[in-house]
Length: 272
Ligand SMILES: [Zn+2]
Image (cartoon, rainbow, N blue to C red; front, side, top):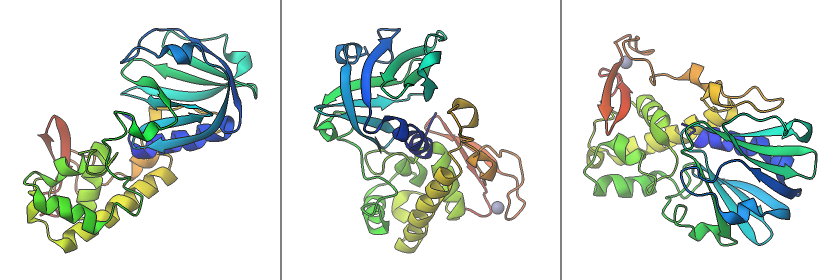
């Protein structure tokens, strides 16, 4: 599943092909992804793309009067293909937006768990977007902000980090990695963390997300975009996916446990 760094990378890759260009029309080969595809996306014609943004794990295509909001679900892929090739498609290629620069933005989704929404200009009030907490890489996500939440809550710190209404888009991989880097057990109850630990954790969340974006995110096999070798951050994982391997710091075996149906990897010696 693409997390924040992957979505940021995808946004950065597609944006130069889209910003300032015109969507000539769309080709849609299914009626429904997770939700019905809005009729306005079927009917779209000659609409200028003012900008392409990301909020949490959502990609936002800003048009003159409206907004397209895209969520990639589990297996959604956005790719840029040459218009000459858009007559060729596979059964999971559900949406093509034909752009006036000889390129097509193609949406592929094997499990159809992603979705496309049509919104007015005021997309921030969209039902999915309005409940998102701050972006972890922005200044309003800081140690004081996080400490305010952790001291109020009586839940595992890892569960708290993955709550999108507190901070958006950290996800399982980066929650595991940032807790390891901060030497904090994922099973610590949030209100037992002191401000010093929260300061270290906040700093590590930001630095690990920046590094992942720099290396193109971490889900290698999902993305195939022209001229881009993306998604090799997974080779730098310190703890995620390393069950029974030796801790890179103390050589103790990494443990895997399940928290809220998600894998938690940690070192019982380094992380307290
Ligand atoms: Zn260790």
